[in-house]
Length: 304
Image (cartoon, rainbow, N blue to C red; front, side, top):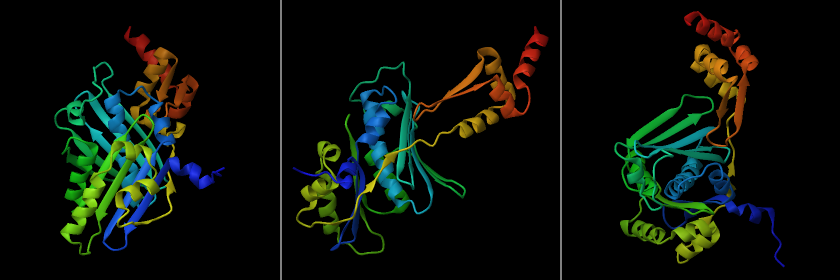
């Protein structure tokens, strides 16, 4: 009987680095199962949007492996069509969260492409948010008809490094594979062509169904890479009552007080984890340090 070690149990949500000793090529593999299922349970995503969000989640988990500082990498795709936004946040503490916003009254076919859903003038936004420094943001027009193609184009433009990315998402899991030429080292065109061609043979079923060990053996058994210990990725939401309080303060006492005067309280749902934060009249007056709700009521009576 096979004994399951803790490491084996956690391989459902892992990011694995690998490197080829005989050529300057590095790689990353990610597969998220429990994390992905937790995210898709939060909303009723149409199939085409769910697939795109899963691919972006895998991409965020891959790209955040390069975080050299404590902080968060935010990867967004924004459009003006039926799909408004896909957003993934991945932290240096190996946690992720993701959500999408779309026109929930619109009809969305199961096999519609990302370009069809986003419409004209869609952009890819990458934000680096260090814990103790100013954020950095890059915004580029969307090039390509898939998350993977879009990222390859972005990386070629920003890093000038040959990179190949494959992404996939099913109902059960999402996964991704990245291979990249290392900078400042010579690599023959033929060798890179060989590695990237092999990476292109991976199927969506293999990306979502196989762990790193089995996938990398299938792809590269003739020139096996050196594989490092996998890192476990977890779902974590960074929402808090304090952050919602800050948002309400930015809206101002007049606006927040009006909602409470009319409805009795103001409720804010987290888009990522659906935690509900409710502020009643006492909470709101304490937040603003004044009786803002009563001030709104008195103003309404004066105008009648």
